[in-house]
Image (cartoon, rainbow, N blue to C red):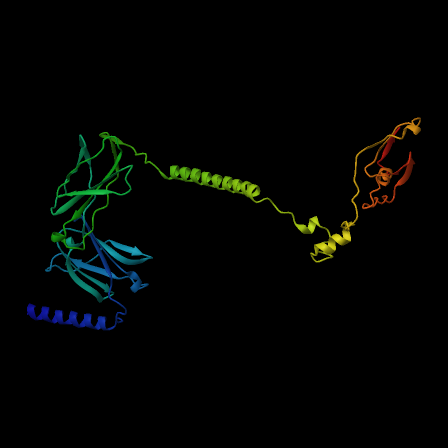
Length: 371
């Protein structure tokens, strides 16, 4: 009788669930995108993309054994006032879960939580220095198949250097004790044991070590200001040399190729009135006297600076006269010589004629006479 009742009750629950599900709208869009992290086998975080069902509070049901009943999440994660994930107590077990919209199941799945393992960060790091090496030691985690990674760099390095070991006992060689080093550690899982969907732990706090002593910080050598100073000095030197070269070049150019004056300013009117015809310009601006050539048969006048005249004895009572004239004509002597082939010089025009002792002189403005 009890078995019949249970069968009838099971049929009623199935029909009721089918009727309720038939009243829910069909899901639209892509399936839910899940993001699962197992934090050191202590807490499992399951989150989904709530934007695919805006304004809807999805419910999360789970169980850790297949023979158990589903139970609803008691610690939801909210985003903009609506559920977007669940936090569970975790361990290395299979998680069976179902995400529902009301009574309609949107996603049902079963998976190992260790597939999404993220170990915790290393703690209590200690350092043992010996000569040019240091050994980093920390407590190992309780589970196996892990890699302990130590990264380090000095103030002179730009990138981190790494070294790994299966236990948290890693020795780093070839170090300079005089340098200050940055050291940090993290833990990774072996892909062969946990798969490719795991996460490395967060980095531990950076520790500063120098000469085997713990330092609060390392003063990094910043090369950028020195580089800027050197580059500025080199640039200033190059600019100074360039300006000096230009100045020297201008001086050499003036010596080798002196400047030629512009004829437009030297010869006024040459280009404005005569279109550059120099002959016409000089004919209009200067009174040029043309010298006539001496014709054949004419005798050139002989110019002397000074002539001393001594009269005959009959005229001894007369004083001696000296005439200095740039131009004069000794007509008396030439006529006495009786040279018929030579003609006397013509008197220069424009002067005063002076006769003295049978000699005739033409006095100009710059001539004088001494008695």
